[in-house]
Image (tube, rainbow, N blue to C red; front, side, top):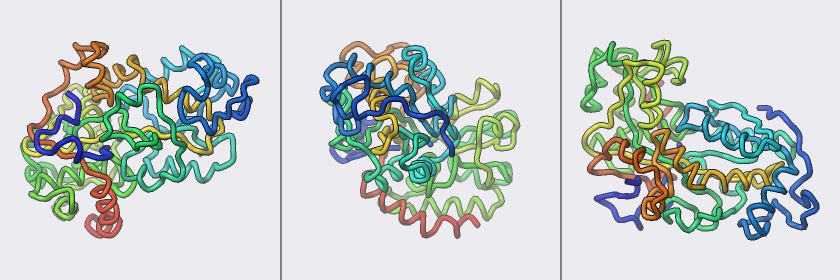
Length: 378
């Protein structure tokens, strides 16, 4: 079941849901202006039909020969397999992977710092709050499967589009800590100096969602994140908030033994830490998608658009599923019979009540966090 099967709020109310992220190597080959002799200007292409066929797009992208990606950890939602499959399918295109642990905000900073250079990111993978703040940096593009992506998770012109998502969860080392059954458990002495979130909520989508979860689990609504900020203030005052950004390495070493993160990311840690467990708390759950976008100043605009077409194909949507995430086209693929049924059946049960922020709620929450977060956890 996709994240949009919300028992409490109708799909129409989930407009633009989300969740889900420098020096790039390489130089551009033929530019998008007329790659491989084509008359298509890849920088202005808004759909595959502007190139003609998929084969025409592939020719243009291969002529450019490079793709600059940023903030794509290989253990994040199975991105490693996704990147490797693209490289295998298009050996003529070199993928330049940079700053895999960068936040969504840092992706945009990299685009600004490298603007006009061959080193700029071609594509972004962003949380909703950062995407909404930076639409002027995106090129509108509708992939060929655009109509199969729910309206609730895409900007209508294709400036940014949800791709994969999950539920906010708590991962913990079960050899060292008891299983939390509620957020209030994390305030207890047993979790002293142990609880981390994945980044700064004013910059990172996962951390933003952790505050959102704390909000709805403490009687609040997504219209006002104050209860979530207050919870983390209490966690900090109790000495339980660990101000270390968790990574695969810090989890493996035990430095960050209790982590708020998306369920698919926490679940993946069990392969390196066998005692690592993941809990989606009872009560109201917080769901979200990460969003794909194309840099309007992409140095390799055809490759950027080919990457988007690739990500929204049946094959790669199933790779997100393999990584424990719920793909954007899950409902349409289930209807068409192209979803991997075994992987879909293996997903953990969804919370009985789920919330996803609207555009207005995300914008208001971002403003509030900018005003109150640093003071709450200092």
